Image (cartoon, rainbow, N blue to C red; front, side):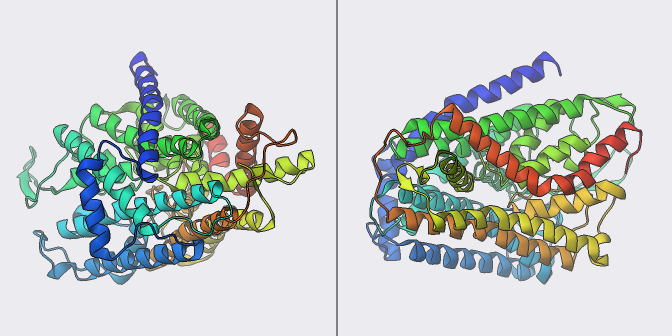
Length: 563
């Protein structure tokens, strides 16, 4: 790693540190209904949208009604994307005459974009027309991200309100998330990316002749607008098949920096926003510190693994599977960030990462992507671990566990355990099923432990709503489209429903005053405990299967064996 790589890493961290409190404070104003610099421009459209939809913005929803509104809204989003795909051939803006999508791939894709997973078992440029990309996928990129933010806001209100029933209004939270946060930032990022050369047009694909005299089709389309929200909304689905490794999606080092910065910008800001909204900034900073510790550890291990000599390739710092535009350090930083943030976009092929670097990307997802995490999803994901941590701390000091003055009792613990363990069960159960069935094994492109890693990563990515892949696995089959689609649904809503149930339970409780026996949740000891709980839960659950996959592959690689 040279001085240029180190400079970019330091600059990346510095930009995040500067942007986090600025954006976090702005988001707090938006979601608390306070005036902000966008209010004069966006306030009237917001009020008009409520009138047209017949929504009373002051109406409160209990957690069950909030959940029902969320589920119905997401079901309609799934149906819309599904129908757009299976009737694609009859729709406009399909200059290439692309055919209708098969039922199983349409199911997988509709579930994927509705759940903010954005897993893609297809290449966008050869499967979906411009209208489906825009009206289906890009719109869902906004709405699935806004859904995650809405759940986060419901949980924050549950923690701060006293003896209350309501968690806010889902439709208001959805509207403000989209109108004030996601749309303005996406417009800015789309303009910046277009200026760097990311394509944005409706031109039919071009036919070109290479220097060798061969015919080549050059795909085009409205990519920049989708790339902006895919990164800002921690969606990750690419306009082109190879995602942000494609020069039309990510042409320059600066476009790479912009997209990589967008991966973590909102997820980090939302944790700071939490501290502002509860009037205890130290609480938000404590969660940010815990996330940052794990992120730095993960990045350090992955980068070290990529820079070590590779006996199989006979070189160190191998560039296989990486883009010369970006280099090794940027490829590893992107891989760690995208798997930490439930984003799933890639600028290098994760299947080509060294075994330990691939392990880090997979483990980030397995931990629940609570290291910054997805937009909204990262916050309510780490809150599940916070509840487990204060419960353990309460047992250690012999007191009823509390968080922000709210007692954590049986129902909250049960819901938190469900949210943490069920996705893990889906990952392991799905991987076992795929390894048992011929239709699952037939998709593997590599033998031995790497083949196991390909399957394990696929189900981790689906259940973790990430979307990245060890792309050597052929997943565009009926088995994988259906199995991974089901894993995405469980991974998304088995966390959302418990989070809202916990919010509803906590909202109805009184706030206990701080006493000498209260365990502080904003200090170094709590941060250490939280990091330990996150890592221990992940290690106890996944260490055996990881030993059979990337860990044993690492030791075999040191002996000169590859798969």
